[in-house]
Length: 623
Image (tube, rainbow, N blue to C red; front, side, top):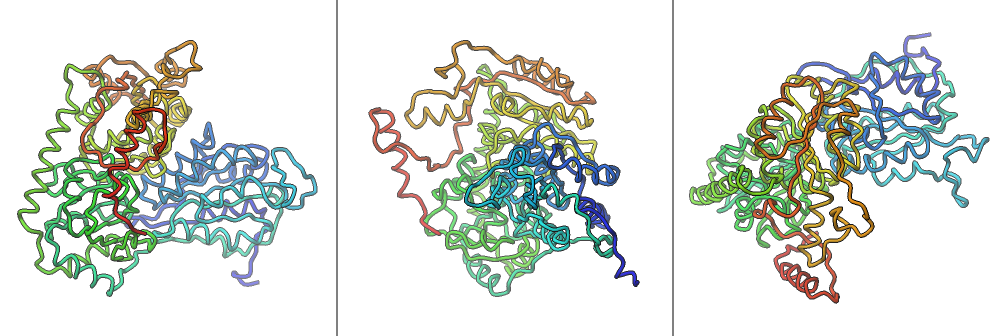
């Protein structure tokens, strides 16, 4: 028998894990395993077979024990984001509710175009013991189960009904997760009996494979059209999205902006593409952006949108741009490149920016346009300085952000999500090093913060272990999902967690009030079914999970506590109350379309609806 005809008799589960062990990627000349390990919670649907296989691979594919499947999915997504989608994790969950708990995390990864592989238990292929524990029975379709719910929130989905199917399914899943345009989560359902079935697998299937991420060369015709439009621009602008970081192209962005002297604004996902003090960095754009970025967006005649999907918080629901402005969409994904009548340039961000710059000759944006943009940025910087300053006013998110920004190391990673903090971090954070900010606002998912911080920290220990991972979270998100404080403690992955307590869901209360509604069911004090208000002792709670923790009264005390947290060798939680009504960033906001009642008995609600609709004529119509 020749070497290529040799076989290994393995169970389906053993073959999956052996194959994953032998997948590698080359990053900056160094070969490393594609999978940094896995996140897992065992149950009857995955412990007996997949668990057996993972035990034998525990040294090569370390398995992190999660506390909640949703949290471990968030951690896996944050791990992939920290590694710029070059490495990722697998998640394994048991059949039924364990797997169902991963749905939200899969949706988050899908919205943010982040890779993770889900290996989840499924009902028996033979159906001999049906109905089984935790199986969802559908009377008209016996093939339908909980795992089918993942189809809308994954880029690749399969159910393994025979051991031989993994020979095709696993390479396809990896190819999807490594594809720059189609990147996202992959789901593989593993029926409990099939996991243990044996098969004679070709030995060559398990040979070491080194993967590379494709860089797609942009089309010549598309580049020519983009150059023709940009060459006559009087007021050009670059929108820098998160795709620039995934392309490892932040330097290419800097080079292009400086070569053509075009001002740059950043999306939420694109925060930290440029340093805060770069003269062409005009600030964050959109609904949670800056006056400076939104001012030049309103005047720009040509907009080069690079690595962004142009979601509504970036575009102010398509009101921040002049309707006649021409958009050039530089994006590796065709779906994103052609939005809103854009001239698409489909290709890798780094290669597309380099090609565009080379073709632009001696073009430079007019001096008066650059001077105007920089004047706007100077005014915005002055506002942010006042906003984060410790003055005689109530504690605010912005003050806490300012304290951390002043005291953190340049390479520390910042993690925030959902609620009011994404807006406040986006507006007020001053980037000290490129690629150090993770504000999860693609899915705007509460509960990501601490779990995502844990996943980011695991990645950071492999990339830059000397840097800290700093998590901003509100009390609402903390109460929703906090158990990965414990995960960080028991795995020795230090986090610094700032819990900013405003007594409920204060940013949604603000939206409620701003649309003419009375405060209702957001702040705990405004919830009619709360009959006995009890403040949560977050310090005691964090300490109970093994973290060091303290509560501070004001930003000055926060600064001292943050220094102690930096010096600590384990997870440190700092709690500070912030005012739910005062201290919000009030400038920089663009319009955001939000459904309001057309008919109401409230004069305030009707007036708010009329004001909302008054912006609609500004809205750019597109496809």
